[in-house]
Image (cartoon, rainbow, N blue to C red; front, side, top):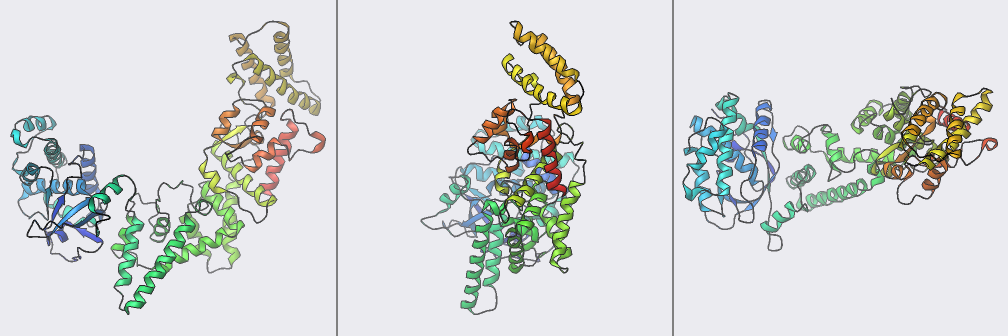
Length: 584
């Protein structure tokens, strides 16, 4: 049924290990009393079984690392290991094998598990296949109640339920147990990670560090070990091998140090350090083309299985190219925009570079520029608006901020790190929704502010605007009568607002700026001059350069300059600045 072992590994070294390999050694895995008992829930078990089932036959399915160390108790006649991390996975695999064994009786189990907590757990797990299978979920509890009271404890309870749930899954999916056994024994790969312990850092301390978040093996950690082992195996004199390892380690540390600088990191990724606890992992994912794979260990698998050669020079080359782009603000700004606007992934940027690297250097820069231009031509600047094109407006204002920053501060870099770390929103310069007001005083201020905008527009077009009359009637009533902001007043304001939308382009790009949500919430639906005062006094939060420029009216011609409200002229000059900066 199962093939002979074709690729045995040494258990004292890091590597990928399938259960058929492991069967050659038939080790004992010892779980010490500092670890909790088996606790996988049904959902976790079914997820693993489904993953194995849907994994194409012959393709590696990798479990997270099994960290272990030599068991120094000398209790057994055969090799044993103390499990530091991975006992839940090892136990679940063992239970799957127990179910398959009961259905086939055609193979020997590749390992056994020993618990130091309860002697009964060892025997219960070893003989769990002596229990009859149930027919449905309801019977699981019934059969558990019939078990000898001496075997009843919380650990055995979870083991028994997991065993029966595995059987019910096999039964429900009409699994060919022989085919499934082959997949379990040969396609599942354990990331075998042996460690050496000491008095200062024993297995128990390592376990606590892992579970407190101080240590978490990443794909990069495993890849690093592969490179070190590769250097050790070279047929070179020992001093030369040691020198290669030192150079490798120094380069690794320098690259990781640079990637840990947020100003560098966030022009090549728009994720706030979530997917890469070790940031050099991004380079491995790029080189192994694992950038979009959901399995965090895919790049390691490709190296470990020889699908991608262990070429450290390739990692260094990619890093050097990124560093070259980082130090040139033209490349930096265009790449940073394409990444942070989700126009392209960094993997796509590298593919684009590969297509142009044999051409003149200007060819790649032109390709980047063309990608930015493609974005700017994907919409009509005069019609995009807050209601229908919110994401486009946000990305356009990001690009505007980048380009105007590049124009006004040559050889300086737009701070993508500050941009990524904030949650951004589109702020209406002139208030968009008076119905959010709760006090009549705020409504009055807003109407007076809006009236100034409309009067200026009336002068420009030499035409009466009906909405001005509506505003005057409302204000006259408020000023001459004692008036609360009641239901009738709100209905009047709603009518005024509907008329205003025909006269003032509240939601168009010339009334929008980028602002972080925290600062935006402070502004509320306030008047222009109140917003300006708040923004100019903001400390701590990053306010984009172009946003500040809007509120100080840097773009408005001095003949039209006033600081009380956001006028039609201000909006026109702002729009003209956007057009000039973006389109030239």
